[in-house]
Image 1 (cartoon, rainbow, N blue to C red):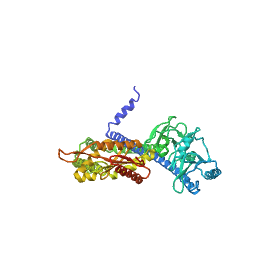
Image 2 (cartoon, one colour; image 1 turned 30 degrees about the vertical axis):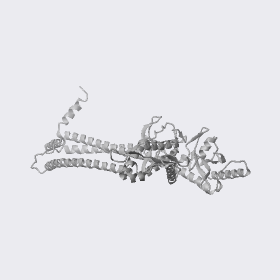
Image 3 (cartoon, rainbow, N blue to C red; image 1 turned 180 degrees about the vertical axis):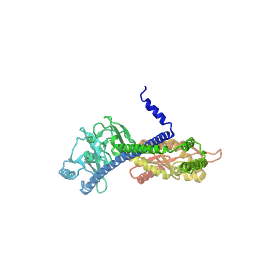
Length: 566
């Protein structure tokens, strides 16, 4: 005899009755419904938790970066205030030289005493020293690593407060904060430098937004970690992403623990800030909510299963009819009607309500299809209008930054982009040049041939210059017959070469200014002025303008560099 044969027969017999089947159906539907709800609830909570983590981790790093940046700004402010209030240099000094005279030795000793006093009251630095413009030591106090003269000269070449990258000397890591020291005429005569105590940053690498397993640490510009006491064995460094909103990564560390981490680049220090936390701790709320949802679902299943068993014993044939009708509606039929009964019991009322619901559902479906068609028509129209609007916006944007005649950039856009180029050149410490180009004898050309010929000349000259410049050069019509050019990422030789190339291209071209077929072709020339950007935009433009006027005075059709007499 097969095992459980008696149990199988008993189950088959019990499932022959409608109440038993209804009970089983209710139990199944309740189980599926609660399972789907549980899955949706847990998935939604997981998405919410993931979103919170994706927002929290970068915000922790941004907050940490802000604290470190504030710390360095306070240090620079303190050094600047100290240099101004203590009079580290004579106010009428024009240059500081290191000599062995008694006067110089006394000045150096006095400066060393002042540096030592500042060092005693500062908890941010290990050493403090002052250098001449040539990188010669004037005075030194505190920590003194072995530094060669080229490195000192590089530190002394500072025009504004600056922070160096990490410097590795004698198997140790150092960082320097440097400020220029000015006399009463705002001229730099020396520089003050602080050796940063990197250990002071340790308290800043903490956050109450991560658990006990969470860690914040720093990688230098070479990708090497420092402040190692903040990194425990088994942690892997997250791959830095571009921008402040770095992607949060999930991976396994060397100890095969699942870890969540992200990183952001940190400003002008060349660092990368990293944060990591064990997934088990980050997702601890998810485990708790899963347990609660499962317990609640089990309670719901048991409750409704019990209720269904009680109700199923009182239901007969009308319920079967209702079930069949409901199944037909589920299969897509909307005009299902059950024959109504003359009785006034609950089953009859349910049948009446069901028929009304079915009819209303049918009418609603018809109405819904009509509305859907109207919505689809409206969407097509809206897409067409959006496409037309986008085209108009692109046209307006293009017209707002270009000159309507020459199709070059206009004066306003040139001024905006020039500031971008100045910022780039300042960051990369590369030279920047301003080139002004003016068409020679343009007024006489207008008077002789007319304004239409003048406009034609401007367009042709603009086309010629556009063919000579590179993709990263900035060319614009600056006003009238004058054009402005900023060569991108080049030295003086490259800027002069580009200016001469444009002058020759225009001079070699032939212009037909009369519309008649036998009109004489004339030669158009341009004068060019070149000036080096000095840090003052207005002054640099004046220099370029002066060079342009000198080119005009030297006979036109030539290139002149400001400050160089030919």
